[in-house]
Image (cartoon, rainbow, N blue to C red; front, top):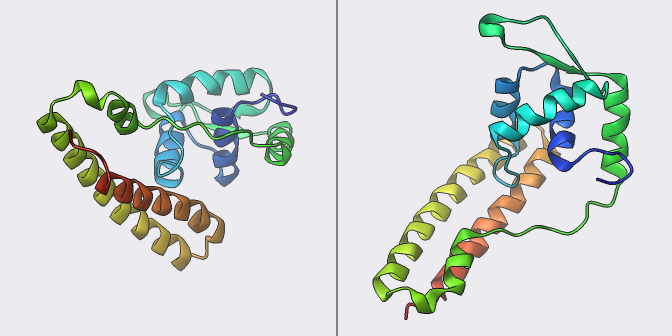
Length: 171
């Protein structure tokens, strides 16, 4: 946390709440729809951050809805905090690739295990690339230039992963 005092997950929630009040479940759906190709959030992270944001006065709780779902809305203080977060240095990337991690120990795999690992990874990245390309197309169609640009990062990532997999050693 830097000057804004919020971590990236909290900041992402504040950013999503600029669209309007949402419950935790709606925030998860919005995060999945808008951010998942390049930023992961878990349900537990969302539900852990929301009470903290409310306690700090950055969001306010609305009236409980069906099944006691609690909508949250961003406050003026939340908007100011989010603006400060946007202006901060984003810091270094964190790379956590489960295939690269397993490849680092490739000498402990059998050739068939590696082949299977690469096949699964290739299938995943091929499907993810197709999905995110569709998201880019839709974002551009809807005039969401910044969303499209962020999604282009995911396109490049999946292309790079597929290219890298072609050169992976198999034993």
